[in-house]
Length: 325
Length: 302
Image (cartoon, rainbow over all chains, first blue to last red; front, side, top):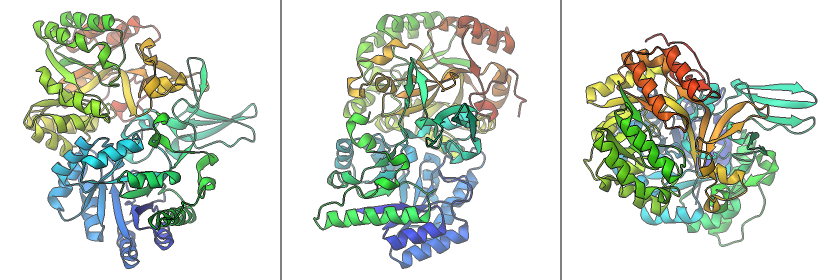
């Protein structure tokens, strides 16, 4: 199975390649990609150089252009697709039908992957994207169980890629405006979710309130860790119940499910975290590469190797187990 | 400007469900979208009422449209979606799966849960047969105006969210079930007790969101009272009103009067508040600010 690894910087790209990533995904340093954070991502020269380095080492590079182009400014996204082709990318990862149509028409030889931001959650729609835009691979939304993934693979020729480690969207990706509801900035339009520019911390009565856009998303007693206030992982009250109504502050860790994902016909395993450090990326890649190599060699999977890297030490297998719903 | 009633986002019992459409037959609206948007498990409870509702509305001269689900994953849901066109009325797609499953060449409309953010996607949908598009509520007026301009050239009508709790997210997980300590498969229809969704508050008791099964909505009711002239100038053809349990037929009437120039924005906002004294309004998205914000004043036209 192919390990698809994030790189937020040229240094992370090199670290991931050296650690054994088969494939790297990254984006340009603007609003065209869904991890549009300050100080992250690649300018055009860095991208060309990164692709060259990866190709020399036998790895592939996918460029994510997976926000939804702004009306009246589509040229920014069109240019990103053209520049990805020119940089020698092995594929572009796109979500917007208009942009897919542009890429298919203007760069037919540039391989197209359907981003998780398109939330294509069944074989009918995946095959439709293949028919309309000739997409070769789909990154599946994090709403599907393993039997559902197997059923999709039985009905499509399009390769499937699934997330196995890192941050976990609780909502169908690309279908969520929670962030812009309180901050004005969204994954779809701006490539950011719950942005740090709208986070503030407020101390009172020995507790630390963590606010997003002025709304208290979390409160930690003195000495307790205060998780980053991603909106859907906040603590709220409803009908006299208090807690993590949408999702606990956990991150996805599906390492033990790799054999089942392989059996379900999955082509590629994706690691989330373009905002992560190169040492984190290298460590995660090494571990997943070891797991995949063990699986291919018919050896038992190494156990619990990544638990210490997970946010707040708590992992979930998310929707892969049906009970999550 | 036309008025469209969007699909009821909530799980109402069969009698109030039917009553809504009986009332709307007499209400000053042009178009009614009905059917199940949020959760396929709800449909069997009122499915047999749909043909009569369609007949009543058509008899009253309304355009009638059937919505698709917002998130289609299961085999059963794909089958349901493929059968939508057989009901003999126009289909509103709220997931591209519904477009994939429509007989090729069928004219259709596009709901607010399909991501139409730019001209390229608008062109593509029009080429597939889209005749009307309700834009995602997240879009600011500048984008609305650009898209309405392009849509006019293509002969496509543009609709914008006019009133109602905003559909902010859809998930594989059911939050009503989770709140009650159940899984989605064993939800026991916890959402049916909340005909307008269940309020979610922050740790400081600030009203914030509302859960509705697998859907998450704004706690505020987005309301375009102050933006109607700007939307009209931008070339918007219709406003969408989302059903609520309090005085919905009256709300339709207020919007009709506002569009016809019989009420000003202040009077509409006051009228809406009279229907539910606790209602909080918002209109931030149209002015490119956080969606939760409320202006209480008109946007300068572009």
